[in-house]
Length: 492
Image (cartoon, rainbow, N blue to C red):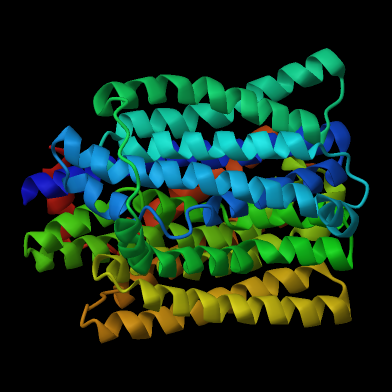
């Protein structure tokens, strides 16, 4: 079991580092687009990315659950081939149908949401197909335990995209939503080809045709997760479309930077989600429930120790960060969005971690109920409140409330599974005090030395904040001697 924990720690560090690079891409791309062509193009690009992500997410129709659940334990190529190929064929076929549907409704999307943004729907469809192929390739290596290949496919892509966009700007001195999509397609194809070659060399080209009975069984397990994805999309992305509908694409461009900054910390639980479910499944399948419980508790503690100071940091430094990443106009309109969304993201991250319990127990119907309840609240609240007040801060507040509701509902259902969760109340209190010490110091420095913010000054403040927080955490003895000894043993 020590080897399992070494795998847990090592893979988490590798994947978290990869996710840092992925999420940093968004913060790098944001100023490139906004400072070059303004918030309207950035807002339009965010809407298109969301549409493609949604169509890709629903294209499986629940098929693929068995592939993700049992591929980690499949040791021979025939077993892997039988799990992998049927869901691949099905998703490619379904994406063709969805592409036709997108082509039909594209005039409505342009009229009601994009409102004047120039867009080629054919490029969006090509982007959709390349997204499916790229995801299928990276998921194969993710669920067969080759984290290095997975990280290559997911972390090289965003920086290749940035490099291509910068090349377009250098050559054309301008950029459009269509050029942004072309860049994404080009880079995705470039990164996916070597992964597909490696994957097919292992599986061979002997396709396994989908069988109706097996697809039905897969849907019975996976369809609730499919509904979960739809509910999660409504919960996390519908606010952008309602802002575009009630206000404008430009207001989406104001809202998105604050949301991106505030939700940045969610990369921690999402990175954990690429490793934690497989290890928990392995432990649970081997009747090592105690180890599965302990991995869950450690994941929660690690996340809270990072998420709490992040919220305080958004309050203290959110405005200058947005000024540098976007511009003064965006910072003035969106700086309160960042800490509100950051607080909501704390609950979102806990939801992502806790959902692994229901995943391991195959309680996918419960996951859907949790997500659907929160999504319905978010959609109704945004529809009513944005109509009445026409202010982008409303969308941030409803996001916070929705994630809180989902957390409470999910926690109740996890406890019904008789799965004890140790949030470490004492550690949370100590972490909160350490975060307040850090936040007050940063606010004091900002107020006393009122001067124009520069990148070097901001980096110095962030570094100081991290140093103060870490020092305070250890001064308050947040970690027990047993935990410190355990971590030293793992690294040794």
